[in-house]
Length: 318
Image 1 (cartoon, rainbow, N blue to C red):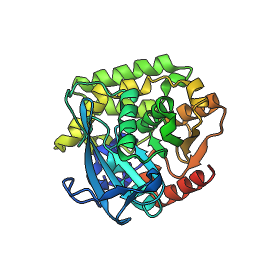
Image 2 (image 1 turned 135 degrees about the horizontal axis):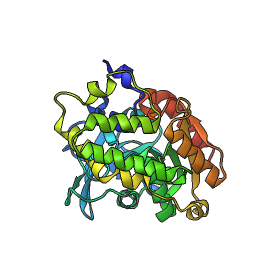
Image 3 (image 1 turned 60 degrees about the vertical axis):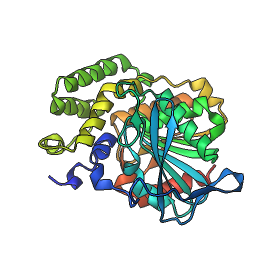
Image 4 (image 1 turned 60 degrees about the horizontal axis):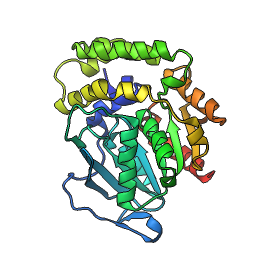
């Protein structure tokens, strides 16, 4: 079993196997080398430098990274961390300042209370505090999967900080007619994981997501000796993040009136998957057409160059 055989797995799998997606950043303790230019646009000394920083926020210490120079774009996941977006961020850094971060409780973003629930509103507040700290908004924000939910929550609560939000495949089950059945399935998935049957939980998750993997893929990824940080991030996602993210109900009236341009992105290879359904439902509810992006749920990892080209095209249409 190779990484290529499982590359179309959902975003969390990529986050949990972040060792294959390490950014070109140096150690997290390196000295920050960023500055704020006139007009609040964040710039760096060079497009190939990645600087790592920590911001204290209520209940957490957020790890974030900055690279590139130019208009600010934020790349955010949940539970994906900054490393998962590194390939795309490196490409975009040629003409953008790029902000990536580990969501609260994931990897390097530590919590005061490890059992605190990770809600979209909390994650949106973290993003707002990061933007205020950098004095770099309004920004374009690309959120993928649970990060798309965080980005939409940010748009609702702080529309002045976001000029464009690209919600790439948000898992908004609450928008679907069969939401009660899906919520019950999610509860079963979480309960199965918490009993210690992670293979069973992941198998159930893939069935719900309508994602087909090769035989033995889940066992290959999650069997045997595992990195303790990957295990911790996985547990946090199942125990404290998955339910709140998929149950989140967007305020459609607030989103329509926010003044923020909203783009709903769907991967070309995601047809009939669960996040295709939820994304289509969101676009319909907002009265907009969905926008196609290369690849599937993790197209920004599968082909960051093609994804960046499409993303730049979308931003130019603003």
